[in-house]
Length: 409
Ligand SMILES: *Cc1c(COP(=O)(O)O)cnc(C)c1O
Image (cartoon, rainbow, N blue to C red; front, side, top):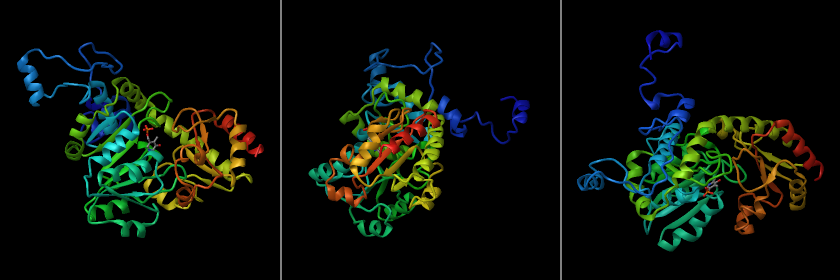
């Protein structure tokens, strides 16, 4: 950049256009990871190709030997997928990112790469349903022990580490009641015990919480949620240091094949361009709606991370820079929750979240129905709870819809 321009913009130090890592978030979201073909296309190219061709047998030999860094097969890596990985890594502040076909494919890979038979995985109890299944049903089949603890209770965490604990899984805020785990405190305990920490950061989004800065080793996303944010494709991501991703995941990703489709990667890559704008707008609306809901006599409890009446408000302020777009409300009884949901006209009844369309769901009978009642009660999920994912519609229209539905309760 010319010196006079840099002076006009009040910029000092090294030229910020030098390295993508030094770009501001908005620039990373638009320019990060971009590579252009010889055609000079403006938008990112979509490489729908399974494999790649080589100029000669010697070139193929060099590519497979790893002496030439090009692509060999889209189960290993693909140029469009790589643009998405590189852009998300920049936004997250991670050295590296690898992707998978869904959030669950990413989380399963993230955990399975850290353990082997005889090891132990420790996790917070309030988890996405499929993560619970992995821990209670699947990993034990292969001789991996698992334990869950009450996420906010540090003493329980401390007591649960074992000499063979190799991986810790945290979801914060957790689905569906927005319970929080002190990421830094758990990372300190885990590292002292020789375990790696995986944080499912879906609810907080890359915009409001950076687990790597809080000490986490791995961050996982369901890109299906806010990263797409427009209800179209599934995707997942694993982020962390180059060394850990290479050592723990490179071969698993290559040989078990959870590869993200280049088409989906392209959709998600474009999703990243507007993610922060969308998430900030959704959050502004969610905070306003949470205040309206909390004031209603029809609702027993309203949970929103950055409202001062959230039981973990201090922790939320410490580790999140925004409350995000999810709100949990308790009507005290299932029939009241159902009457509320059925009276909504604008807000859809749907189990997805992070979408531009607002959605509401009754977790006990949908997303969390596979849990036993005892397990549900253990995480406080009684029958009257509704989870709301706030979208991009006008706040006044959403407030009117909520008021209509509250009147029906
Ligand atoms: C949706 C979700 C997942 C799973 O992601 P998929 O893309 O549906 O596989 C995992 N964790 C959380 C917190 C989620 O919301």
